[in-house]
Amino acid sequence: MKILVPIKRVIDYNVKVRVKSDGTGVDLANVKMSMNPFDENSVEEAIRLKEAGIATEVLVVSIGEKKAVETLRTALAMGADRGILVETEHGVDIEPLAVAKILSKIVAEEAPELLILGKQAIDNDLNATGQMLAALLDWGQATFASGLKIEDGKAIVTREVDSGLQTIAVSLPAIVTTDLRLNEPRYASLPNIMKAKKKPLVEKTATDYGVDTTPRLKVLTTEEPASRTASIRLGSVDELVEKLKETGIV
Amino acid sequence: MSVFVLAEVAGGVLALDATAKAVTAAAKLGDVTALVCGPVAAGEEAAKIAGISKVLVCEDAAVADGLAENVAKLIIENASGATHIVAPASTSGKNVLPRVAALLDVMVLTDVIEIVNAETFKRPIYAGNAIQTVASSDSVKVLTVRTAAFEAANAGAAAPVVSVSLSEASALSTHIEHKTLESDRPELTSAKIVVCGGRGVGSENGFALISGLADKLGAAVGASRAAVDLGYAANDLQVGQTGKVVAPDLYIAVGISGAIQHLAGMKDSKVIVAINKDEDAPIFQVADYSLVADLFEALPELTGKL
Ligand SMILES: Cc1cc2nc3c(=O)[nH]c(=O)nc-3n(C[C@H](O)[C@H](O)[C@H](O)COP(=O)(O)OP(=O)(O)OC[C@H]3O[C@@H](n4cnc5c(N)ncnc54)[C@H](O)[C@@H]3O)c2cc1C
Ligand SMILES: Nc1ncnc2c1ncn2[C@@H]1O[C@H](COP(=O)(O)O)[C@@H](O)[C@H]1O
Image (tube, rainbow over all chains, first blue to last red; front, top):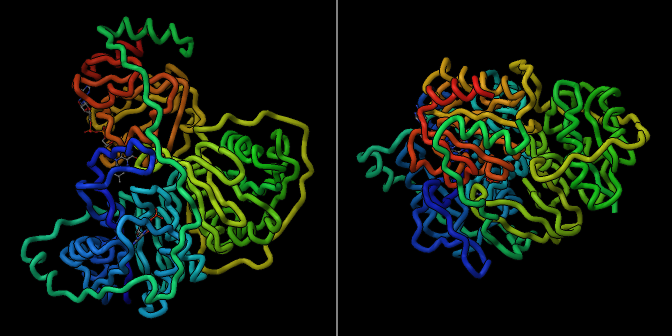
């Protein structure tokens, strides 16, 4: 079974994001970029399935500017076998609908039986690509996975939902999106980082797949969220009790 | 304009608060038809939300467990002519609406916090570090709305309830089981008060201090990701970028450092209290009232004195 894992290069989750003062977006100049955290869980899960003898090949794909090659190399160093970069213009974020369309073309060429995506990209926080791709392919979907097993041509997935945990079975080929508790992603070892440099990685563009990536959403402004008023330091539990009573809530 | 709303149903029961909040957002856009995937009783309850002019109820087993393939198909079959398709930004709304959007070849807008006009919406990005205003050029706007950002619609006169069913159920996925921890406490996203515990609580037993204070206040219990990962609390109690977004009247954060991913889920609460032994903890930057103290001393005292 071949597994395809789409991974996105995003601002590192530890970076304090700054909004540009002219309202045109956030400042991405000279900030640390990393693999989207949920995508690390996806890569890890795919590699574990390969180690367990269930998967035969792990293919990673990233749609983004040239530097996304670094992110693909990280996934190859973790243990993925092969990468595809679909290069896009610098500074332009491709919307999930267009990402899903590009991925659907790659699926048609590569015929994977399982796609593992992150549940959301921590830059746009959209949480949409996996579900959209499942619709385009007319495949079953299991989102927000915290547990995954492959059994009798099905993915048995435990999903983190608002009311607890739901387990569903999805016939393969299928789309799974990962939640952070699915696994603990490994770090790439130095020898594996060296080996990853020799693993196959091809570079394509969106036009190679005939996909129109024109955005459907126009960003008008990007602003700082409203800030909160300064905090009052209290000296004791008694003061806190008094303040809480003043609010009239308790 | 006509707006189609997917009502929130959990375990065959209407989630009234989440649905009524989504209806408030939807009613700004036009005449609301709501779809309830569940028993007729749930549909009848939804029909009493002011702003809904018609309720469609689907009792088919195929949609009872929220399977995305079937629910998305049911929406497509019943929402023709709608200018907007709206759902609460719950795990069910987030699971289904992007699928609906792709079937219609339109983009989806998730976690909307403000409806500016019929084409323009505000939503947070980068874990709430920035707020984007976006205009959609798509023929149908598909959006999930963050319930914490809207007031619940009131009760009104009962709207007509009509039964619908799915043309053909998909066999792509099947429901196996649902594990829910029953609790008498208020539900996290609709509670007026939330007491939230983090890694500082130290153990599952330590977490009893959090529940103790919550019970004293009639509050819901929340947890940071670290507390959930460590097994102190259930996954559905997680507050933050990856968990639930809450905006109660009062939020009490105990033993939580205040990582941006946690703040993303609670910083719009009306009054925030933080108790932490580290005076430099970032949680204090969003707190209205800060108490630098050891939680193992402060919490029992606080619970006792309230
Ligand atoms: C993609 C992504 C998504 C994430 N999503 C979420 C999310 O949805 N929600 C979330 O919460 N996190 C999320 N996180 C994790 C987040 O980055 C933090 O790691 C997490 O919030 C830390 O939890 P904490 O504050 O409980 O633990 P810590 O950061 O370890 O803080 C513990 C605090 O307890 C205090 N403390 C310790 N002992 C005591 C005591 N005796 N008395 C008083 N105070 C004490 C310490 O001073 C410290 O400030 C996410 C991370 C990533 C990468
Ligand atoms: N540009 C991209 N390249 C590769 N994968 C992507 C891209 N955008 C989104 N994805 C995948 O889709 C998931 C969800 O992203 P999103 O729908 O944007 O929140 C991510 O975790 C990735 O697995």
